[in-house]
Image 1 (cartoon, rainbow, N blue to C red):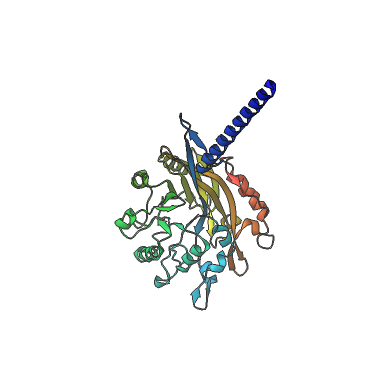
Image 2 (image 1 turned 60 degrees about the vertical axis):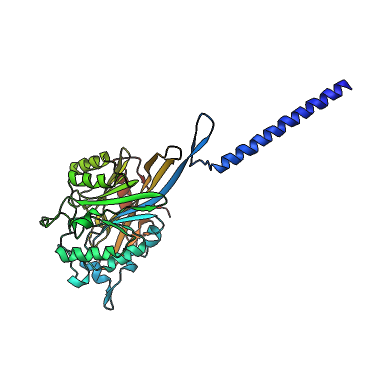
Length: 390
C-alpha cells in the first residue's frame, strides 16, 4: 500500500507539472500573438523579458525615363479635333498601376495647345499627355530638364497650372514663383513620408531669367533644399538631368554628383538626359540610376526606343521602444520598355513592356535585351534584371 501511495503521489506531481507547463505555453503564445512578432517584424528583448517589436512598412516604386513628345507622336495622337494618348500607354498601365509610387520625367513641357504645340528643338506638348500618364498610374513627375525653358514664361505658367490642379501628383523642378519653388511637397503613404527634388545641369544655353523657372543644379542649391526637408521626411529622392546625350557610359561628373548626393543622405538618385539606358549602382545605401533613357519618344534607334523601368522597395523599420527608424532601398530590379511605331508611316506609337514583345513588334528585342541586361549590372552586381520570361 505504501508503494502505491507513493506512485499516486508521483503521478499527481507529474500532472501538476504538465498543467503548469501548459499554462505557461498558453500565456506565452498569447503574449507572442499580441506583440505580432513575425519574420518580417523581428523583436528585441530587454532584461526583464519584455518584447519590443520592430514595425516594418513598405512602398513599392517604379521609375521610367523621358516623356519626350515629338511631332510624330502628337500628330499620331490627334483625331477628331482632339488629342488622345491613352492607347499609347494601354500596355503599360497594368504594369505601372500595381506600384504604390511611379515616377517619370516630363521632358517636353506641358504648355498646352493654347500657346501652340511644337517639336524639336523647342518643345511644347498637349496637356492630354499628362492625363494619359496619370491614368497609367504615374504620380511623381520631374520637371527640371534642358527643355524646361523652351517656350518661356507662358509654357511654364500653363504647365504648373496643370500640375497644380492634380493635388495628388508630386511635382518638382519648375515653378512660377520663389514661393512655389520653396513649397516642397512631402507626401505620406503606408506610414512612410517621401519627397522628390529635381535639378538640371543644363538649359541648352537658354539664359535663366530667375532662380525658379527651372531648378539648376549646384551643390549649394541641393544642400539648401535637402536641409529644408530632411527632418520632415523619411525618404528623399533626387531627379538629376545630367550626363551626355546618347552616351551609354557614366561620366565623371555624374559619379561626383551621385557621391555628393549620397553624402547628403539622398535615398534614390534618378538620372535622365542621355536618352539611352545607363547602368545603376548602390553608393553605400543610396540607389543611383544614371539614366533611365526614353519612355516614349519619336527617336529612331533601338537604344533610343528602349527605356529602363527600375523598380524597388522602400522599406522603413521602426524600433517601437526607442522610436528610431531606418530606411533601406531593396530589391532594385531592372526591366525594360520599348516604343513601337510603324517605320514606314511613322504612326502607331505605343509603349510595350519587353516581356510583351515579339519579332513582329521589335525583331531585335532579344539581342537588345541581352545588351541592356549586361550593361545594367556592369557597375554593381546587386542590381537585378527581370527575365524576359512571361
